[in-house]
Image (cartoon, rainbow, N blue to C red; front, side, top):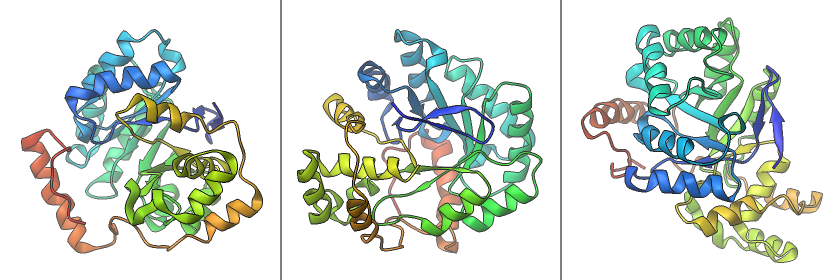
Length: 295
């Protein structure tokens, strides 16, 4: 496993296991499988509604807690100083831990400044080892870096071969914010796994297109959290440290960039409305696995 060092000196595994849209029924088993095959970073969120299952798996498995890098995210309905602070403490209880390795603000909407002050305090109290944001476009990232006491250490955003976020990464690098990719495969959109360039490169190394994508991320210095509910795929995704892509292959993948999101733009007012409605829906359903997507 390769590790990166965050701006505050905390070491973070560069490849972890994400549990977005892993059902409550499957989540405990999946996290146990992930830890069994060698993952040491687990990424969840309040809005995934599976923190309790993640916590149960971490408690049951035989890996020492200090060897697991655990991330959760504060959801929009808990923004504002007091609500955010209370929600993080509640998440820690659900996760059966007395500290978090990383806690992120999930979206750049509502009172994220109040929520950020709560994360700053919890960080200074030693309850969180590193704090960051998610889905913060360069303007919002520069804003929070410029007007906060403590700068975010991580920004988790959409990154994959078809949307490489070169400009956003430049701004993150400028402010020493680690880029982390959700949906590192773009959920397979645009026939990514069938892409001839990725498969041709994979054939050269005896690897799958998915493994080539993950290796490309790692060599760009991106943290990745692929998701699978199948232990065989978990193992495949982890088996990417025994080869390196050539400069030529990296350039061929760079040429696949469309510079367009495979999902949506956080700048789009209609999507902001969608998020506001989704917050209310998730309050009622406590489930993100069955909701209708707007893209």
